[in-house]
Image 1 (tube, helix red, strand yellow):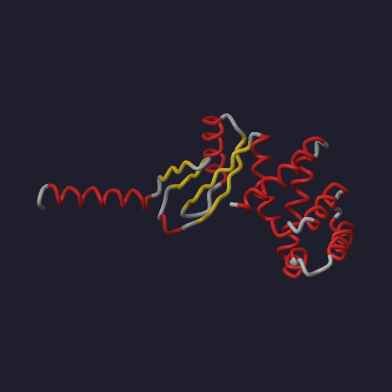
Image 2 (cartoon, one colour; image 1 turned 90 degrees about the vertical axis):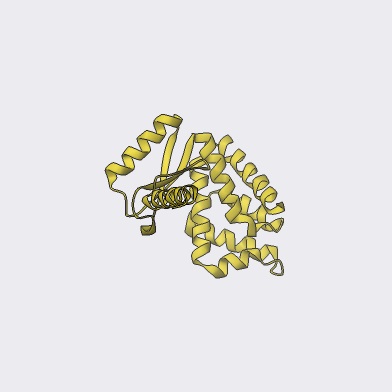
Length: 186
């Protein structure tokens, strides 16, 4: 719970700066890229979060990385504040919250689509158009392949689940038959 509040506070502050500078996308990309870089360099991820390492040293590493990763002055300052306040370990949650704020601001809805096999381009466009029309918002589709659903789709839109998978239909039909057999004594 406290983690969530901390992440929201810092993401909100970074988002306000990005909004005021009209650089929401650029700062989102910097944050996303920096975290991706840290995830690939596990030592760096741990290094930035270690409270026993001098803050000055950790800030210096950020300054050195800023040249290699082309980080903006605002992002460097943000990272220095995180280090100063011992909040660097919250970066993944800050990204998650910043992403939510960005999507809300830009009217973007993330739609998760699960299918038995990779969607064809026409299917993706059809799903996207149908949901965009219903919500009047821009849609970004995250696709996941799960062969165990046999066929059809499972679509998650803003926490609402639409399950049209063949697996679920078969399970529902099985349960219906089971109930009927129990009711009719068969």
